Image (cartoon, rainbow over all chains, first blue to last red; front, side, top):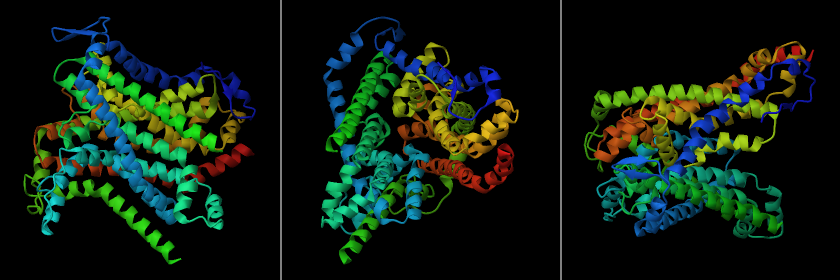
Length: 297
Length: 276
Protein backbone atom coordinates (compact mmCIF):
# COMPACT_ATOMS: atom_id res chain seq x y z
CA UNK A 1 0.00 0.00 0.00
CA UNK A 2 2.83 2.35 0.82
CA UNK A 3 4.67 3.41 -2.28
CA UNK A 4 7.26 5.98 -1.42
CA UNK A 5 7.16 8.92 -3.72
CA UNK A 6 8.83 11.64 -1.68
CA UNK A 7 7.04 14.94 -1.97
CA UNK A 8 10.31 16.78 -1.76
CA UNK A 9 11.90 17.69 -5.02
CA UNK A 10 15.33 17.73 -3.43
CA UNK A 11 17.78 15.03 -4.47
CA UNK A 12 18.01 12.84 -1.43
CA UNK A 13 20.61 10.46 -2.74
CA UNK A 14 20.99 8.54 0.49
CA UNK A 15 17.31 8.01 0.82
CA UNK A 16 16.97 5.39 -1.85
CA UNK A 17 19.68 3.32 -0.20
CA UNK A 18 17.86 3.46 3.11
CA UNK A 19 15.81 0.46 4.09
CA UNK A 20 12.17 0.30 3.02
CA UNK A 21 11.50 -0.50 6.64
CA UNK A 22 11.83 3.17 7.49
CA UNK A 23 8.70 4.18 5.60
CA UNK A 24 6.75 1.18 6.84
CA UNK A 25 7.77 1.80 10.44
CA UNK A 26 5.98 5.13 10.27
CA UNK A 27 3.11 4.26 7.97
CA UNK A 28 1.94 1.02 9.56
CA UNK A 29 1.30 1.53 13.29
CA UNK A 30 -1.82 3.66 12.81
CA UNK A 31 -3.67 1.42 10.31
CA UNK A 32 -2.73 -1.66 12.33
CA UNK A 33 -4.04 -0.19 15.59
CA UNK A 34 -7.17 1.38 14.08
CA UNK A 35 -8.03 -1.76 12.08
CA UNK A 36 -7.50 -4.09 15.04
CA UNK A 37 -9.39 -2.08 17.61
CA UNK A 38 -11.65 0.35 15.74
CA UNK A 39 -12.70 -1.08 12.38
CA UNK A 40 -12.82 -4.64 13.68
CA UNK A 41 -14.89 -3.53 16.68
CA UNK A 42 -17.41 -1.72 14.48
CA UNK A 43 -17.62 -4.63 12.03
CA UNK A 44 -18.06 -7.05 14.88
CA UNK A 45 -20.88 -4.87 16.19
CA UNK A 46 -22.68 -5.50 12.89
CA UNK A 47 -22.08 -9.24 13.27
CA UNK A 48 -23.41 -9.06 16.83
CA UNK A 49 -26.81 -7.86 15.60
CA UNK A 50 -27.34 -11.35 14.08
CA UNK A 51 -26.37 -13.28 17.20
CA UNK A 52 -28.79 -14.57 19.78
CA UNK A 53 -29.05 -14.68 23.56
CA UNK A 54 -29.68 -18.00 25.29
CA UNK A 55 -29.73 -18.36 29.06
CA UNK A 56 -28.34 -14.85 29.44
CA UNK A 57 -25.37 -15.76 27.26
CA UNK A 58 -24.59 -14.31 23.85
CA UNK A 59 -24.14 -17.06 21.27
CA UNK A 60 -23.05 -17.00 17.63
CA UNK A 61 -26.02 -17.33 15.34
CA UNK A 62 -27.44 -15.95 12.15
CA UNK A 63 -30.87 -14.66 12.95
CA UNK A 64 -32.83 -11.62 11.88
CA UNK A 65 -34.82 -11.84 15.11
CA UNK A 66 -33.09 -8.89 16.79
CA UNK A 67 -33.65 -6.61 13.83
CA UNK A 68 -37.28 -7.66 13.42
CA UNK A 69 -37.97 -7.43 17.13
CA UNK A 70 -36.47 -3.94 17.52
CA UNK A 71 -37.55 -2.30 14.29
CA UNK A 72 -41.17 -3.46 14.65
CA UNK A 73 -41.45 -2.44 18.31
CA UNK A 74 -43.56 0.68 18.83
CA UNK A 75 -41.35 1.99 21.64
CA UNK A 76 -38.28 1.72 19.43
CA UNK A 77 -39.93 3.61 16.57
CA UNK A 78 -41.20 6.31 18.94
CA UNK A 79 -37.78 6.63 20.51
CA UNK A 80 -36.09 6.75 17.13
CA UNK A 81 -38.18 9.63 15.84
CA UNK A 82 -38.00 11.41 19.19
CA UNK A 83 -34.21 11.23 19.13
CA UNK A 84 -34.05 12.55 15.57
CA UNK A 85 -36.43 15.35 16.53
CA UNK A 86 -34.46 16.27 19.68
CA UNK A 87 -31.19 16.34 17.77
CA UNK A 88 -32.67 18.39 14.92
CA UNK A 89 -34.21 20.83 17.39
CA UNK A 90 -30.92 21.11 19.27
CA UNK A 91 -29.04 21.78 16.01
CA UNK A 92 -31.55 24.45 15.01
CA UNK A 93 -31.64 26.19 18.40
CA UNK A 94 -27.84 26.09 18.72
CA UNK A 95 -27.42 27.51 15.21
CA UNK A 96 -29.84 30.36 15.95
CA UNK A 97 -28.30 31.20 19.33
CA UNK A 98 -24.78 30.92 17.95
CA UNK A 99 -25.14 33.02 14.81
CA UNK A 100 -25.16 36.50 16.41
CA UNK A 101 -22.21 35.38 18.58
CA UNK A 102 -20.20 34.18 15.62
CA UNK A 103 -21.16 37.26 13.63
CA UNK A 104 -20.15 39.57 16.48
CA UNK A 105 -16.84 37.73 16.85
CA UNK A 106 -16.00 37.83 13.16
CA UNK A 107 -17.03 41.41 12.44
CA UNK A 108 -17.17 43.37 15.70
CA UNK A 109 -14.12 42.24 17.65
CA UNK A 110 -10.44 43.05 17.29
CA UNK A 111 -8.28 40.10 16.15
CA UNK A 112 -6.71 39.69 19.58
CA UNK A 113 -10.14 39.58 21.23
CA UNK A 114 -11.30 37.11 18.59
CA UNK A 115 -8.46 34.82 19.59
CA UNK A 116 -9.24 35.13 23.30
CA UNK A 117 -12.94 34.36 22.79
CA UNK A 118 -12.14 31.47 20.43
CA UNK A 119 -9.76 29.83 22.89
CA UNK A 120 -12.15 30.34 25.79
CA UNK A 121 -14.79 28.52 23.75
CA UNK A 122 -12.48 25.51 23.50
CA UNK A 123 -11.91 25.39 27.27
CA UNK A 124 -15.28 23.81 28.20
CA UNK A 125 -14.39 20.73 26.16
CA UNK A 126 -11.64 20.00 28.62
CA UNK A 127 -13.92 20.13 31.62
CA UNK A 128 -16.06 17.20 32.58
CA UNK A 129 -19.31 17.30 30.63
CA UNK A 130 -20.86 15.16 33.37
CA UNK A 131 -20.07 17.75 36.00
CA UNK A 132 -21.37 20.56 33.81
CA UNK A 133 -24.65 18.72 33.28
CA UNK A 134 -24.90 18.15 37.02
CA UNK A 135 -24.30 21.87 37.63
CA UNK A 136 -27.22 22.72 35.41
CA UNK A 137 -29.34 20.70 37.80
CA UNK A 138 -28.22 22.97 40.64
CA UNK A 139 -29.13 25.98 38.53
CA UNK A 140 -32.45 24.71 37.22
CA UNK A 141 -34.15 22.70 40.01
CA UNK A 142 -37.21 23.92 41.83
CA UNK A 143 -35.23 25.46 44.70
CA UNK A 144 -32.14 25.99 42.56
CA UNK A 145 -30.27 29.16 41.78
CA UNK A 146 -32.41 30.49 38.92
CA UNK A 147 -35.72 29.89 40.66
CA UNK A 148 -34.19 31.32 43.84
CA UNK A 149 -33.28 34.56 42.09
CA UNK A 150 -36.65 34.73 40.32
CA UNK A 151 -38.32 34.18 43.70
CA UNK A 152 -37.00 37.54 44.89
CA UNK A 153 -39.04 39.27 42.21
CA UNK A 154 -42.02 37.01 42.92
CA UNK A 155 -41.74 34.88 39.81
CA UNK A 156 -41.91 31.15 39.53
CA UNK A 157 -40.89 28.64 40.55
CA UNK A 158 -40.72 27.26 37.05
CA UNK A 159 -40.33 23.57 36.27
CA UNK A 160 -37.03 23.50 34.41
CA UNK A 161 -35.80 19.96 34.98
CA UNK A 162 -36.93 16.57 33.71
CA UNK A 163 -38.44 18.13 30.61
CA UNK A 164 -37.47 19.00 27.05
CA UNK A 165 -36.18 22.41 28.15
CA UNK A 166 -33.67 20.80 30.52
CA UNK A 167 -32.55 18.33 27.86
CA UNK A 168 -32.04 21.16 25.40
CA UNK A 169 -30.02 23.14 27.95
CA UNK A 170 -27.85 20.05 28.36
CA UNK A 171 -27.40 19.69 24.60
CA UNK A 172 -26.41 23.37 24.40
CA UNK A 173 -23.74 22.73 27.05
CA UNK A 174 -22.34 20.11 24.74
CA UNK A 175 -22.72 21.78 21.34
CA UNK A 176 -23.03 25.56 21.65
CA UNK A 177 -19.30 26.36 21.91
CA UNK A 178 -18.39 24.21 18.92
CA UNK A 179 -21.26 25.61 16.83
CA UNK A 180 -20.17 29.18 17.61
CA UNK A 181 -16.58 28.30 16.71
CA UNK A 182 -17.43 26.58 13.42
CA UNK A 183 -19.77 29.40 12.40
CA UNK A 184 -17.10 31.92 13.36
CA UNK A 185 -14.48 30.18 11.20
CA UNK A 186 -16.77 30.24 8.18
CA UNK A 187 -17.83 33.87 8.75
CA UNK A 188 -14.22 34.96 9.19
CA UNK A 189 -13.55 33.67 5.68
CA UNK A 190 -16.36 35.62 4.04
CA UNK A 191 -14.89 37.99 1.47
CA UNK A 192 -15.13 41.48 3.02
CA UNK A 193 -15.28 43.06 -0.44
CA UNK A 194 -18.65 41.39 -1.02
CA UNK A 195 -20.01 43.11 2.07
CA UNK A 196 -18.55 46.47 1.07
CA UNK A 197 -20.02 46.05 -2.38
CA UNK A 198 -23.43 45.37 -0.84
CA UNK A 199 -23.11 48.49 1.32
CA UNK A 200 -22.07 50.58 -1.66
CA UNK A 201 -25.15 49.37 -3.47
CA UNK A 202 -27.20 50.68 -0.55
CA UNK A 203 -28.09 47.25 0.73
CA UNK A 204 -29.26 47.54 4.34
CA UNK A 205 -27.30 45.88 7.15
CA UNK A 206 -29.81 43.14 7.85
CA UNK A 207 -30.37 42.45 4.17
CA UNK A 208 -26.61 42.21 3.67
CA UNK A 209 -26.45 39.58 6.39
CA UNK A 210 -29.28 37.54 4.90
CA UNK A 211 -28.44 37.89 1.21
CA UNK A 212 -24.65 38.17 1.24
CA UNK A 213 -23.08 36.91 4.47
CA UNK A 214 -25.20 33.81 5.10
CA UNK A 215 -25.03 32.49 1.52
CA UNK A 216 -21.24 32.91 1.41
CA UNK A 217 -20.79 31.17 4.75
CA UNK A 218 -23.38 28.53 3.90
CA UNK A 219 -21.10 25.48 3.86
CA UNK A 220 -19.66 26.26 7.28
CA UNK A 221 -23.04 27.02 8.80
CA UNK A 222 -24.44 23.70 7.61
CA UNK A 223 -21.32 21.89 8.80
CA UNK A 224 -21.80 23.45 12.25
CA UNK A 225 -25.45 22.38 12.40
CA UNK A 226 -24.51 18.87 11.27
CA UNK A 227 -21.93 18.61 14.04
CA UNK A 228 -24.55 19.76 16.51
CA UNK A 229 -26.96 17.11 15.27
CA UNK A 230 -24.37 14.33 15.45
CA UNK A 231 -23.27 15.23 18.98
CA UNK A 232 -26.81 15.60 20.34
CA UNK A 233 -28.02 12.45 18.60
CA UNK A 234 -25.41 10.32 20.34
CA UNK A 235 -25.53 12.06 23.70
CA UNK A 236 -26.51 10.06 26.74
CA UNK A 237 -25.90 12.46 29.60
CA UNK A 238 -28.44 15.22 28.93
CA UNK A 239 -31.52 13.06 28.31
CA UNK A 240 -30.51 10.81 31.18
CA UNK A 241 -29.56 13.24 33.94
CA UNK A 242 -31.36 16.44 32.93
CA UNK A 243 -34.33 14.74 31.28
CA UNK A 244 -34.40 12.06 34.00
CA UNK A 245 -34.52 9.24 31.39
CA UNK A 246 -38.12 10.14 30.54
CA UNK A 247 -38.87 9.97 27.71
CA UNK A 248 -35.83 7.93 26.62
CA UNK A 249 -33.62 8.53 23.60
CA UNK A 250 -31.83 5.88 21.54
CA UNK A 251 -28.65 6.11 23.60
CA UNK A 252 -30.67 5.44 26.77
CA UNK A 253 -32.31 2.41 25.11
CA UNK A 254 -28.89 1.17 24.15
CA UNK A 255 -27.39 1.63 27.60
CA UNK A 256 -30.40 -0.07 29.21
CA UNK A 257 -30.09 -3.04 26.88
CA UNK A 258 -26.44 -3.48 27.87
CA UNK A 259 -26.50 -2.62 31.54
CA UNK A 260 -29.77 -4.10 32.72
CA UNK A 261 -30.15 -7.16 30.54
CA UNK A 262 -27.27 -8.71 28.76
CA UNK A 263 -29.07 -7.91 25.53
CA UNK A 264 -25.95 -7.07 23.56
CA UNK A 265 -27.43 -8.03 20.17
CA UNK A 266 -30.38 -5.67 20.64
CA UNK A 267 -28.10 -2.89 21.85
CA UNK A 268 -26.03 -3.53 18.72
CA UNK A 269 -29.14 -3.12 16.56
CA UNK A 270 -29.80 0.26 18.19
CA UNK A 271 -26.16 1.29 17.76
CA UNK A 272 -25.98 0.28 14.09
CA UNK A 273 -29.27 2.07 13.40
CA UNK A 274 -27.76 5.17 14.99
CA UNK A 275 -24.55 4.96 12.96
CA UNK A 276 -26.55 4.45 9.74
CA UNK A 277 -28.72 7.47 10.56
CA UNK A 278 -25.70 9.63 11.30
CA UNK A 279 -23.99 8.61 8.06
CA UNK A 280 -27.15 9.42 6.13
CA UNK A 281 -27.54 12.79 7.84
CA UNK A 282 -23.88 13.68 7.27
CA UNK A 283 -24.18 12.67 3.61
CA UNK A 284 -27.39 14.66 3.03
CA UNK A 285 -25.99 17.69 4.83
CA UNK A 286 -22.82 17.68 2.75
CA UNK A 287 -24.79 17.25 -0.47
CA UNK A 288 -26.98 20.16 0.58
CA UNK A 289 -24.04 22.33 1.66
CA UNK A 290 -21.96 21.83 -1.46
CA UNK A 291 -24.67 21.16 -4.03
CA UNK A 292 -26.67 24.30 -3.50
CA UNK A 293 -23.54 26.38 -3.34
CA UNK A 294 -22.43 25.26 -6.76
CA UNK A 295 -25.89 25.95 -8.09
CA UNK A 296 -25.93 29.54 -6.88
CA UNK A 297 -22.62 30.35 -8.51
CA UNK B 1 -23.63 55.93 12.41
CA UNK B 2 -25.26 55.87 15.83
CA UNK B 3 -27.32 52.80 14.98
CA UNK B 4 -24.19 51.03 13.75
CA UNK B 5 -22.51 51.57 17.10
CA UNK B 6 -25.62 50.39 18.86
CA UNK B 7 -25.62 47.17 16.82
CA UNK B 8 -21.96 46.60 17.68
CA UNK B 9 -22.66 47.14 21.36
CA UNK B 10 -25.70 44.83 21.24
CA UNK B 11 -23.73 42.08 19.50
CA UNK B 12 -20.86 42.35 21.98
CA UNK B 13 -23.26 42.24 24.94
CA UNK B 14 -24.99 39.21 23.44
CA UNK B 15 -21.64 37.50 22.95
CA UNK B 16 -20.71 38.20 26.57
CA UNK B 17 -24.04 36.72 27.72
CA UNK B 18 -23.50 33.63 25.59
CA UNK B 19 -20.04 33.16 27.10
CA UNK B 20 -21.60 33.54 30.56
CA UNK B 21 -24.08 30.80 29.61
CA UNK B 22 -21.24 28.56 28.46
CA UNK B 23 -19.28 29.10 31.67
CA UNK B 24 -22.25 29.18 34.07
CA UNK B 25 -22.13 25.46 34.89
CA UNK B 26 -18.37 25.50 35.43
CA UNK B 27 -18.59 28.50 37.76
CA UNK B 28 -21.62 27.04 39.56
CA UNK B 29 -19.87 23.77 40.14
CA UNK B 30 -16.86 25.58 41.58
CA UNK B 31 -18.97 27.76 43.90
CA UNK B 32 -21.14 24.90 45.12
CA UNK B 33 -18.15 22.70 45.79
CA UNK B 34 -17.65 24.97 48.82
CA UNK B 35 -21.31 24.86 49.85
CA UNK B 36 -21.94 23.47 53.34
CA UNK B 37 -25.41 22.08 52.49
CA UNK B 38 -25.95 18.60 51.14
CA UNK B 39 -28.79 19.66 48.86
CA UNK B 40 -27.61 22.52 46.70
CA UNK B 41 -30.07 25.39 46.97
CA UNK B 42 -30.14 29.14 46.65
CA UNK B 43 -28.78 30.95 48.57
CA UNK B 44 -26.05 28.52 49.52
CA UNK B 45 -25.56 27.24 53.04
CA UNK B 46 -22.22 28.74 53.94
CA UNK B 47 -18.57 28.07 53.22
CA UNK B 48 -17.15 24.62 53.82
CA UNK B 49 -14.39 22.43 52.50
CA UNK B 50 -16.22 19.35 53.77
CA UNK B 51 -16.89 17.91 50.29
CA UNK B 52 -13.26 18.18 49.30
CA UNK B 53 -12.42 16.31 52.47
CA UNK B 54 -14.99 13.62 51.72
CA UNK B 55 -13.95 13.38 48.09
CA UNK B 56 -10.30 12.97 48.97
CA UNK B 57 -11.07 10.46 51.73
CA UNK B 58 -13.26 8.29 49.46
CA UNK B 59 -11.24 5.18 48.58
CA UNK B 60 -13.21 4.71 45.33
CA UNK B 61 -12.33 8.22 44.24
CA UNK B 62 -8.67 7.68 45.12
CA UNK B 63 -8.66 4.39 43.19
CA UNK B 64 -10.44 6.05 40.26
CA UNK B 65 -7.94 8.88 40.23
CA UNK B 66 -5.05 6.44 40.31
CA UNK B 67 -6.55 4.43 37.41
CA UNK B 68 -7.26 7.60 35.45
CA UNK B 69 -3.65 8.73 35.74
CA UNK B 70 -2.35 5.34 34.53
CA UNK B 71 -4.79 5.25 31.62
CA UNK B 72 -4.24 8.89 30.64
CA UNK B 73 -0.44 8.75 30.69
CA UNK B 74 -0.12 5.37 28.95
CA UNK B 75 -2.72 6.06 26.27
CA UNK B 76 -1.28 9.54 25.64
CA UNK B 77 2.22 8.12 25.16
CA UNK B 78 1.03 5.46 22.69
CA UNK B 79 -1.35 7.80 20.86
CA UNK B 80 1.32 10.49 20.49
CA UNK B 81 3.87 8.01 19.14
CA UNK B 82 1.38 6.63 16.61
CA UNK B 83 0.09 10.15 15.89
CA UNK B 84 3.62 11.33 15.13
CA UNK B 85 4.30 8.39 12.83
CA UNK B 86 1.03 9.02 10.98
CA UNK B 87 1.63 12.76 10.68
CA UNK B 88 5.14 12.15 9.38
CA UNK B 89 3.84 9.63 6.85
CA UNK B 90 1.27 12.14 5.67
CA UNK B 91 3.89 14.89 5.52
CA UNK B 92 6.48 12.93 3.59
CA UNK B 93 4.86 10.29 1.42
CA UNK B 94 2.27 10.15 -1.29
CA UNK B 95 0.70 6.81 -1.98
CA UNK B 96 -2.35 5.07 -3.32
CA UNK B 97 -5.30 5.21 -0.94
CA UNK B 98 -3.95 8.07 1.11
CA UNK B 99 -7.38 9.62 1.62
CA UNK B 100 -8.69 6.37 3.05
CA UNK B 101 -5.55 6.18 5.18
CA UNK B 102 -6.17 9.64 6.64
CA UNK B 103 -9.88 8.93 7.11
CA UNK B 104 -8.97 5.87 9.15
CA UNK B 105 -6.80 8.07 11.36
CA UNK B 106 -9.34 10.87 11.83
CA UNK B 107 -12.66 9.01 11.91
CA UNK B 108 -13.04 7.70 15.50
CA UNK B 109 -14.20 10.93 17.21
CA UNK B 110 -17.06 11.30 14.70
CA UNK B 111 -18.67 8.12 16.01
CA UNK B 112 -20.60 8.81 19.25
CA UNK B 113 -18.46 7.69 22.16
CA UNK B 114 -21.27 5.61 23.60
CA UNK B 115 -21.49 3.53 20.39
CA UNK B 116 -17.72 3.20 20.30
CA UNK B 117 -17.94 2.04 23.89
CA UNK B 118 -20.47 -0.67 23.05
CA UNK B 119 -18.54 -1.78 19.97
CA UNK B 120 -15.35 -2.05 21.97
CA UNK B 121 -17.00 -3.85 24.87
CA UNK B 122 -18.51 -6.43 22.54
CA UNK B 123 -15.31 -6.87 20.57
CA UNK B 124 -12.78 -6.83 23.40
CA UNK B 125 -14.77 -9.29 25.50
CA UNK B 126 -14.83 -11.64 22.50
CA UNK B 127 -11.04 -11.57 22.20
CA UNK B 128 -10.58 -11.68 25.97
CA UNK B 129 -9.27 -8.15 26.50
CA UNK B 130 -12.18 -6.48 28.29
CA UNK B 131 -12.77 -5.47 31.88
CA UNK B 132 -9.34 -4.16 32.77
CA UNK B 133 -7.27 -1.03 32.59
CA UNK B 134 -5.57 -2.09 29.37
CA UNK B 135 -9.00 -2.23 27.69
CA UNK B 136 -9.55 1.45 28.45
CA UNK B 137 -6.03 2.27 27.31
CA UNK B 138 -6.56 0.50 23.96
CA UNK B 139 -9.79 2.42 23.33
CA UNK B 140 -8.45 5.79 24.43
CA UNK B 141 -5.53 5.40 22.05
CA UNK B 142 -8.00 4.88 19.18
CA UNK B 143 -9.81 8.01 20.29
CA UNK B 144 -6.73 10.21 20.87
CA UNK B 145 -4.69 9.40 17.75
CA UNK B 146 -6.58 11.98 15.62
CA UNK B 147 -5.92 14.80 18.09
CA UNK B 148 -2.23 13.97 18.43
CA UNK B 149 -1.82 13.51 14.70
CA UNK B 150 -3.55 16.79 13.81
CA UNK B 151 -1.37 18.86 16.17
CA UNK B 152 1.90 17.31 14.98
CA UNK B 153 0.88 17.50 11.33
CA UNK B 154 0.22 21.22 11.69
CA UNK B 155 3.72 21.72 13.07
CA UNK B 156 5.32 19.59 10.35
CA UNK B 157 3.56 21.77 7.79
CA UNK B 158 5.59 24.70 9.08
CA UNK B 159 8.90 22.90 8.56
CA UNK B 160 11.04 23.78 5.57
CA UNK B 161 11.10 20.64 3.42
CA UNK B 162 14.69 21.35 2.40
CA UNK B 163 15.89 20.91 5.98
CA UNK B 164 15.53 17.14 6.01
CA UNK B 165 16.80 16.79 2.44
CA UNK B 166 19.86 18.85 3.35
CA UNK B 167 20.63 16.49 6.22
CA UNK B 168 20.43 13.52 3.82
CA UNK B 169 22.73 15.23 1.38
CA UNK B 170 25.23 15.76 4.15
CA UNK B 171 25.27 12.03 4.75
CA UNK B 172 22.73 11.58 7.51
CA UNK B 173 20.66 8.41 7.39
CA UNK B 174 16.89 8.76 7.41
CA UNK B 175 16.75 7.81 11.09
CA UNK B 176 19.57 10.20 11.89
CA UNK B 177 17.93 13.08 10.04
CA UNK B 178 14.66 12.33 11.77
CA UNK B 179 16.30 12.43 15.19
CA UNK B 180 18.43 15.51 14.56
CA UNK B 181 16.15 17.60 12.36
CA UNK B 182 12.49 16.55 12.43
CA UNK B 183 12.16 15.60 16.11
CA UNK B 184 13.67 18.81 17.52
CA UNK B 185 11.51 20.88 15.19
CA UNK B 186 8.28 19.08 16.13
CA UNK B 187 9.09 18.67 19.82
CA UNK B 188 6.73 21.44 21.02
CA UNK B 189 3.87 19.89 19.06
CA UNK B 190 4.75 16.43 20.34
CA UNK B 191 4.60 17.66 23.93
CA UNK B 192 1.38 19.57 23.21
CA UNK B 193 -0.11 16.41 21.67
CA UNK B 194 0.92 14.43 24.73
CA UNK B 195 -0.88 16.80 27.08
CA UNK B 196 -3.91 17.13 24.82
CA UNK B 197 -4.25 13.35 24.56
CA UNK B 198 -3.95 13.11 28.35
CA UNK B 199 -6.69 15.72 28.75
CA UNK B 200 -8.94 13.84 26.32
CA UNK B 201 -8.46 10.58 28.17
CA UNK B 202 -8.77 12.28 31.55
CA UNK B 203 -12.38 13.33 30.89
CA UNK B 204 -13.63 10.41 28.81
CA UNK B 205 -16.41 8.51 30.58
CA UNK B 206 -18.57 6.75 27.96
CA UNK B 207 -16.05 4.30 26.51
CA UNK B 208 -14.38 3.80 29.88
CA UNK B 209 -17.76 3.05 31.44
CA UNK B 210 -18.45 0.26 28.97
CA UNK B 211 -15.09 -1.47 28.84
CA UNK B 212 -13.66 -0.87 32.31
CA UNK B 213 -15.46 -3.61 34.25
CA UNK B 214 -14.39 -3.12 37.86
CA UNK B 215 -11.39 -0.94 37.02
CA UNK B 216 -13.24 2.36 37.26
CA UNK B 217 -11.65 5.60 36.19
CA UNK B 218 -12.52 8.90 37.84
CA UNK B 219 -15.04 10.04 35.18
CA UNK B 220 -16.79 6.68 35.51
CA UNK B 221 -16.88 7.16 39.30
CA UNK B 222 -18.50 10.56 38.77
CA UNK B 223 -21.07 8.94 36.48
CA UNK B 224 -21.83 6.34 39.14
CA UNK B 225 -22.17 9.04 41.83
CA UNK B 226 -24.56 11.00 39.61
CA UNK B 227 -26.70 7.95 38.97
CA UNK B 228 -27.01 6.89 42.58
CA UNK B 229 -27.41 9.92 44.77
CA UNK B 230 -27.34 13.64 45.12
CA UNK B 231 -23.82 14.33 46.15
CA UNK B 232 -22.02 17.65 46.39
CA UNK B 233 -18.88 15.53 46.35
CA UNK B 234 -19.33 15.57 42.58
CA UNK B 235 -18.74 19.34 42.58
CA UNK B 236 -15.56 18.94 44.60
CA UNK B 237 -14.26 16.14 42.36
CA UNK B 238 -15.35 18.12 39.28
CA UNK B 239 -13.44 21.19 40.43
CA UNK B 240 -10.33 19.13 41.11
CA UNK B 241 -10.64 17.44 37.70
CA UNK B 242 -11.18 20.86 36.14
CA UNK B 243 -7.96 22.17 37.64
CA UNK B 244 -5.98 19.14 36.45
CA UNK B 245 -7.44 19.29 32.91
CA UNK B 246 -6.91 23.03 32.66
CA UNK B 247 -3.31 22.62 33.74
CA UNK B 248 -2.79 19.99 31.05
CA UNK B 249 -4.41 22.14 28.36
CA UNK B 250 -2.56 25.29 29.43
CA UNK B 251 0.76 23.44 29.42
CA UNK B 252 -0.10 22.19 25.91
CA UNK B 253 -0.85 25.76 24.80
CA UNK B 254 2.29 27.15 26.37
CA UNK B 255 4.31 24.45 24.60
CA UNK B 256 2.88 25.57 21.27
CA UNK B 257 3.43 29.26 21.89
CA UNK B 258 6.85 29.03 23.56
CA UNK B 259 8.45 27.27 20.61
CA UNK B 260 9.08 30.41 18.62
CA UNK B 261 12.26 31.89 20.19
CA UNK B 262 13.84 28.61 21.33
CA UNK B 263 13.18 26.93 18.01
CA UNK B 264 14.62 29.79 16.03
CA UNK B 265 17.78 29.51 18.10
CA UNK B 266 17.92 25.75 17.79
CA UNK B 267 17.24 25.63 14.09
CA UNK B 268 19.06 28.73 12.98
CA UNK B 269 22.62 27.34 12.86
CA UNK B 270 21.50 23.92 11.69
CA UNK B 271 19.53 25.44 8.88
CA UNK B 272 22.54 27.53 7.91
CA UNK B 273 24.79 24.49 7.94
CA UNK B 274 22.35 22.48 5.89
CA UNK B 275 22.15 25.09 3.22
CA UNK B 276 25.93 25.66 3.14
